[in-house]
Figure: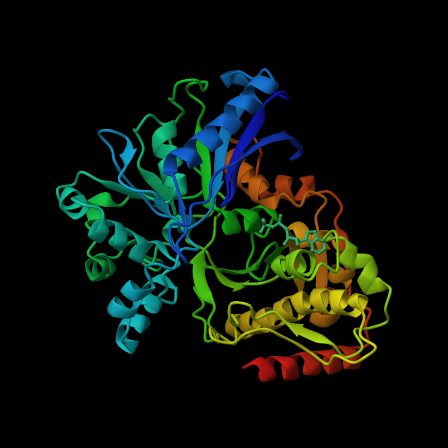
Length: 497
Ligand code: ADP
């Protein structure tokens, strides 16, 4: 046994790139993080320079390697997790991108979606094939925009001279010295061009968006070979053995390998995924169906239902930065605990509309139930409770689509550190919450995918055993009281709609 070996996870996020060193016990030994520039050329537009993404990622990798005096022999393999949907088009002969990356948050292509997916028939076709509800968020319309707006791009693409990739594909292509043009099934499932049932780029959708198939990467399983490093300044020959989009990597890092297992990440927004096994459940509640990362011994494609909450930790930031009633996000915990309840106050944080299951993009936020006795502690508590109510609504929608309730919710993300929030969440959900000691589940998931493929870890049983004792939260609240609170929340939601 080579006890000294490590896996490196390249955790390529929306605002920073990190390289994370992970040992055989699944511990995060160290990491190096490099932020990079966010580019906002017009209101609603968001871009990254693909070279910034690359150099922040490679910079963090070389710093980590140098800091620990690692050679290629010390590194078992590399796993990659990445911001999803963000779109890059480049010329493989020069290695130069034809434009900045269009970031998942960018809304510039909404008119393309309206134009191409405006009819109920097309919307249904897109949902049937991809599991997604047509939106500018996914890669398809972003590629189309580049081909329509970058001079000469369409012609070059049609001549087979340009490649498309999400960020994982771009990193793999550069790291392998231009040898491998591939993505994994999870990232493919977020492009809105991949047929998640047939497991291929969909000809009808490529036609609909006018995208030549020659641009599209080969689609591989998430746990398995993606080539070897061949890039100046990085030890040569390290195998890249795992790739997954960030949310699917987090699901894997939470050891949710089986149908019925779910995770929620409490970050700026929330992302919740429920593993549904080999069954691609179609949502009736504005959720999407997506492909999960599976262990290498699972042959069949496996799926999840995914839903998000737009404003979660962002509401806590708002209390701090706009209202100025807290200094640190963590202050909300003692403030919430210092009062018995919110005194009837509810905050509906529909800053950018209401997401699933309500789907009212035009709704705007509200604080209701204010009295002369309302203090900032009540407001702080109402903010945390609002996070929990939104997750309850999402969880109900998922359970309805999946046909069974969620029994355990695995949690991670910055705000999962808040014990008041976790207890209240368990009270409102009426199910068990499990918070792992290591809440860096995204990098862990990427590392697990790589390490299972090389045999660094023997299988998912070993990974489950590595997971240290979780913090667990169970319902302590009287169910009638929980229903009463929830009814108050729904009343507040109705008022903003
Ligand atoms: P992201 O990955 O989306 O940037 P993180 O997972 O780093 O987010 O979580 C940061 C978010 O969590 C911030 O919006 C912050 O306000 C919130 N947050 C962090 N710590 C706490 C806490 N103890 N209580 C409540 N919210 C918190």
